[in-house]
Image (cartoon, rainbow, N blue to C red):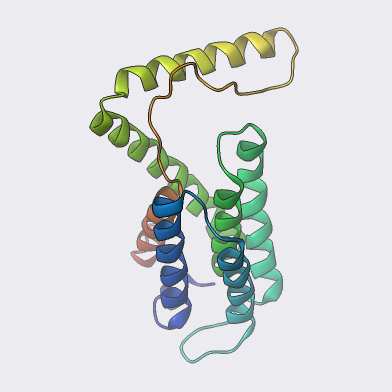
Length: 186
């Protein structure tokens, strides 16, 4: 979907509503309901398939491609236990609204937003030092496993360094990407 036309009609409103609901659930319950992301994915495909006033439809195939890209890019992080399944499904839902190309950039922006937010949360909670120790340990373990020819795996840190409902990062990253695209910077 063209980022400029995205702001002119309801797909943006629907996406923002879904993202707000996901953030609310993730913050309150630490879960993103399947019915929310599945209904959102269906709406994304439908809205991309319909000819709506002021919006050039991207088509169902591009919406499904965006869904697949969102799922595929974050699924390895779930396999490594770095993200929850709800976060992966939420990014797939976002992809159904944005299409494949924009989803790649929304994922990158979400990962950057997640890093910044994780540092802010760790600083606020007073766990920044522990978070940095954990990051160093994870990198060292990963490097040693790779050098030994083992499969990548993330072990839980001995002491937690903070906790961030990742739907916030996905919503922030999506907002950043859409703002950049609408401003012609993407």
